[in-house]
Amino acid sequence: MFFFKKNKPVLSDLIPNDFVDIHSHLLPGIDDGSKDIETTIEMIQALKSIGFSKFITTPHVMEYVWKNSKNDILENHKKTASLLIENNIQTPFNVGAEYMMDDHFRELFQNETLLTLKDNFVLVEMSYINAPLNLYDILFDLQVAGYQPILAHPERYNFYHNNVKEYHKLKTVGCKFQLNLLSSVGYYNPQVAKIADYLLENNLIDFVGSDTHHMKHVAFFNNKIVLKNHQKLSEVIQNNSFFNF
Image (tube, rainbow, N blue to C red; front, side, top):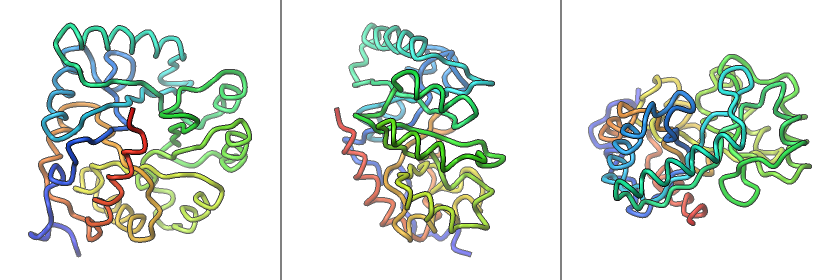
């Protein structure tokens, strides 16, 4: 196996000093991420010390779990941004959302404007149990509505691990992929790391994100990369400059 070889770099060493994170859960008390403003401040300061310079934080929008409205997210972001300034944290801090492609998602994007990462780029995710039966219809309609879907952490969907052709199909229909950086250090499990390696090797990853929820996630940036394709990972990390603001 390729895991735990000694010649791999530490993940934090691959983060450039101008890194723009496009996936995190830093808004306090709105989902399963930061619980309060003190935790938000702690995470931001720790990530800044690694090289993170700007954040587009992405709270969950899930009908049956985190039913966050657009207004709720924007109000939380406004309050949080103000508190950060009061605490002398000047780090640019924008907000988007991570939308679950559930039964209500199509109705949502057909009836209101989504919170995007930039322009029409919208972060979407699926259940870890199975893909929606109408997944390709949702992606088609989302693009007809004018959005460019970015699928969050494709390497974590176990139901694709033995059917990697689906990854290629998703790319063919216009879906971009965002890899979780912690997948590169084996945070989730060895199989997720193996698929992350496959996606990088086949040039299927477009962007990366921290998907930071708590300080335990931040701590793992001090771990060594377990992937063979760490050079490709380094190259993909540079792509996040597209979201600079």
